[in-house]
Image (tube, rainbow, N blue to C red; front, side, top):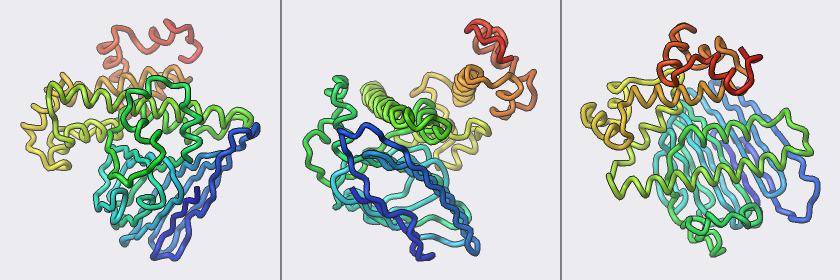
Amino acid sequence: MRTRSAIKELNKVLYDTIIEYDKSCLKNPVKREDFLVDDNGVLMTLKILSTNGLHISETFFRSNRPLTVEWMTEKPHIRFFLFFSGQSHVYDGAGNENYTNSVGTVQRNFLDTAGGGGTAIIHENVGARFVNIKMTLDFYINLLKDDDWLNQDSFHQYVLSGKPQNRPNEILFMDLKILSITQEILNSDGMDDEYRYHFICLKIREFIFSLHLNAHSRMQSKKVYSPSDNIENVRSYLILNLNNPPNSAELARIFRINEKKLKEDFKRQYGMTIYAYVVQVRMEKAKKLLLEDHNVNEVATLLRYQSVSHFIKVFKSKHGYTPKEFVKHFGCDQLI
């Protein structure tokens, strides 16, 4: 699998890499590359993780003028694309389609050289942040060969057919679990190289399983209620902006939805108000941070609460005990 990306205006190749998969390989070092472009109003950071059968890139752009990003990937491969922020429009992408990337979405596809390329326009003064996960067909099949739950996954069955059809991207939406797994993969630098490859493989399996649950939940919910993609996109947008969540009026403006209808559809779909959902997810994230060695002051700061006392009050109201009591319950009172 050859994968390549370049910025047309700067005449700069971001990467041009050959990724192969060798099942018999016992040592699988994870190569990390970091690139910075700061060129006359164009700022770009790029982090690449590449290893046996796998290529992961995290890209951030901000520019005072539109940028044209061209990419291509040869040979059959599986692609997951996560769009975190900004604006970009794609021409001649998967399925030969033109489309706009939406914040909070995850695209998955099985592609060959046809469909494995395209052009994206990154809008000026807005920028974009996205993560691309690409793997060879052999890597994917070997990674999931013992996972029987995938027998019920239509995307997996499509991959097992072995014949990419250049279908349009399947669009899913980020949740807290998918976001957390992605961050763990990207932030695995401190791990011994002997174990890092296996850690990343486990996390990729978990990522794919989480997407499977996401797709299954979406399919089930539409049997009861058929929300527009906008409502699911709103939820993903909230998850990506937990530190500074927009209110319903701001969301209505961002997604061009009537505010009253947005509130009604959101509550019908998720069984709670937008505010209650934000509190619930922030408190889930708070518990995770507490168990990751962050103290109460740090968690309150990370979640952008105005005061530690306010954070403690919300936490206790939601869980029935204070953060300190929660940590003690799990036998970790040294964290407070």
